[in-house]
Image 1 (cartoon, rainbow, N blue to C red):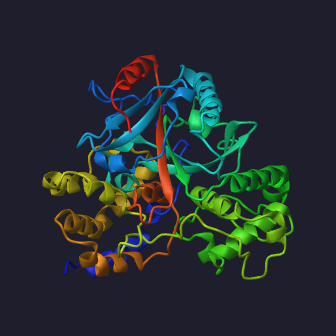
Image 2: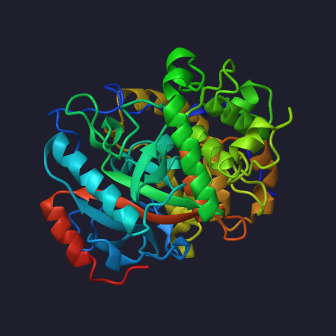
Length: 445
């Protein structure tokens, strides 16, 4: 039996950043020296790669099963193998962007138009902000797989838009708000985005999601302006169902009643991925079902996945911090154990913002128990052998739904997978785009 030191496990109570997004685009979060946003997504000098992505920022190739009709969009698509092994990596759609904020906004609007019409972006998809530049920094962003934010996709007239918490102009738009395109000053934007697709989003359910979003946008001035009912939640460790003493079904129902303005008093603040998770669960309900719901919540509520533990204790579940482990176990067996330290080592902390660096340093001593679990599994221990340690790790925090949770769900075992990985968007300059077109001639899953 593999055991972990329980005294160290208890310290994971403080691992707040592992369970949710942060408002990660203010001046404390990114360093934007020249005011034009950070560098384009193409960062590799290797002729075989567009991005130098480590395995812990990758997905297994066998998890890439969603078909793309590449004849319907103009951008090159390529398989970008990781720096450790080519069987894990990212399926990238490269998009050329111009210089400056306006060039970035234009590229993102064009992307939203073309990829929606090609079916690459669909109602209910989750777009995850991906920061490949955080590779080789510190353990905490590595465990998060470089993912810092979750946005929700919806369409109008065949064109894709995003609606994210915080529900404000810095996030909501056509992927052209400052979170995505930068503002030329303190906000550097995001040059890489993962697209993942929840299971069960039928055409009727997508239509209902559009209706809920339309109603929310119509009433938002009162909901958040006058009554401040669905403001951003900064206490990431405590999801709303925990802080309110309700069930997730009840909080989803409450959100629906707030959107319909039949509830004009309840405060239900949410972090970014929590809002997206709730809207997806709400999309299985009609307005009348929510209006008439009993006190224990509407029976129509259908969550994409249940709130997740920190780490899985058996094969029927997957944990918030399991992402790099799932990819690690897809590497060739002889190299697995040697890769574990790369996840937990401190490389170049200067890559992190001051705020993220501070949190990373605070939790660095707490990564020991998780490293022990990874090492045991990489050495060949089955999940049953680490079950007791995993349960102790997860017992100190409530089950949750972080941005990384959506990506982890997309690479879980097919028997428990509830989300599919679609692709990763990389916004690149002209030279990167030419390189992407050449790499797109190679086989792509």
